Length: 271
Image 1: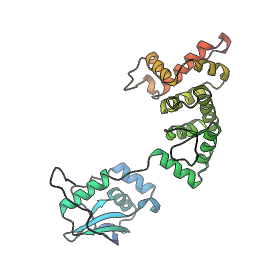
Image 2 (image 1 turned 45 degrees about the vertical axis):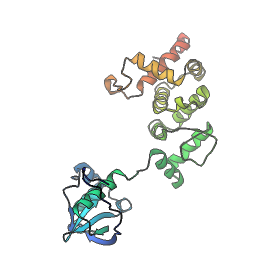
Image 3 (image 1 turned 180 degrees about the horizontal axis):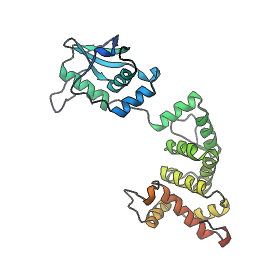
Image 4 (image 1 turned 90 degrees about the horizontal axis):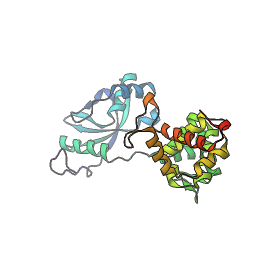
């Protein structure tokens, strides 16, 4: 590994030890990021030992230098400066090797993606996640990493969670039902924009006739729906910015409304 354009340094040969070390004995080296005030306060205000984990440090020149976990240390320090924490301790690293290890921790560590986080909630038995899975299953939908097979996969599961939390289970049920019956699992209909745009439409216009809506959507693909929405809204496809602080998928909602009105008799049109 190269450090700041320098020579390659191998840092994976030294086996660390573990020790409980007081916060007052931990120091920040120049390569460390300055702890962000708001994040530090959030850690302190919502402190949870389950999330604290192990602090990675290097013992060099008679001091313990924080390699990874600076924000957590700063957050706990606001609550209890005299606390001791479990540390993974490397001895014998040079300053340059510490830098390399710091870069490794902050550039090569893989965090959980949205699907992995959702799957963990399902396995945990989270009631909302279980309810979402049940609603998706009704329409033969599932999420990436699920144990359910032979289903159409909704990749942006965070969009599904958003709909459920913002609008409720009924709107999510109707959203997935309309999308499934109209586009039969077409992956272009399962994008974040289409999912959120459809759910916003169904939430704002709760008295619509579903037969009219299906007829309105039958003649357009989800991709063309998005293109038509962008054109009608007069916005740049790469950077959607609607006036009034409207969300980035609201143009989809408006396009669906226009299609609905084009197919509805006068007495059934919506404003």
